[in-house]
Length: 275
Figure: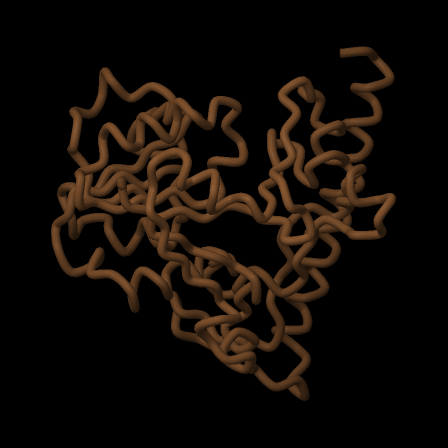
């Protein structure tokens, strides 16, 4: 990496970090002191209301692909994080789907939770002895798990559920990851999947040659992503051997319910079963 690239990357991260910090402090002050603002934001985890949520996401994200068409990539979400317990919008919607459309919390299923969301993880910890968390990075889960190669860790047909929310877009070898998931998943088990989808794109955008964070940020809208899923996401999953049932927030919930819980209107959680 060239010196000027390191400087640009460091400068950008510094600006983004400070801008997010200032916004967060401002919103926390509003929650504490702005008594004239109604507390209408509800959190499914801590069961409390807040006046205004905290921001989350990337501050400046305009994809190179979209720029010519004037379509901005999703970036900073200003009402994403519960100021009381710290739950995220995507995490709350995932929890809503798990609670209302599965029995995952009621039985001691064999579960692999990849890159586990903290508040959902807390609902399993100490209650289900068959619940395993995994992450590619040390210290972020119970086990280091590389989704592209789990042969030394887990037997075939082992898990009833694999929860994988906003992970697949960071994995270069998507085919290996999905094949390994199919191997360790029981025939009647479910991959519970969520991915970032750009509905303005007909085809998923990939470029494995982009390794510099700024390049990925410009091209995909996130410095860790290696692809941006388009409207072909269902076909891709079908081609990999999955039948998909999807739950989209604005198709199963009212506008008022989405607003109250601060869900993302277009957020989708998929229950994927092996064909």
